[in-house]
Image: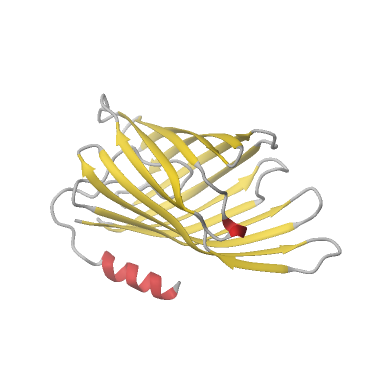
Length: 251
């Protein structure tokens, strides 16, 4: 992970030429409504993420994971995405049972993002279709999954904006739907913050609800650092999720 961060910072020092960098999709539950210009590349890394949860039987699970998202433009309004979780470590401990630990890689997915017509400077929307192309290690794979998601953003003024994200995912004999509203504030030209909530319904599974906040800081015009957290709102949701990351754009 240390070497990954050094490489990322080295690449991020490359100057940006041409068009203004697009907004990044991390952090947060949803994604941005703009796309990477053709010939550009956005690299978004989690460094890493932490999750803690406890089930009704007292089994406590903690997970550390790194995630990678690559975004490149295909044509105006069209973007190709490749996402992966190359490293994960999970620990489990419960009443009257020894602690166990597992390591491995998660699933890899490919996605196609489309910034739909009719968007304006105040209101914009986009769709993202994705599917698993490579299954990870058994302990960290959800099997074949396909998802369709949408995001709508509206700017109230130069500082405040709101967004609504929705997605539907199918695969491995399960279906789930997620909704997430969020509110963002540009504190300064380089510092931003947001509040979000997320609600997930999965067939034959208890519903989950979380809420949290995050910060973004533009280290350079093409480099963003971020930190975020989410808290579970019911017993069926992860107790705590923490994330840090870096994202940079190359043209």
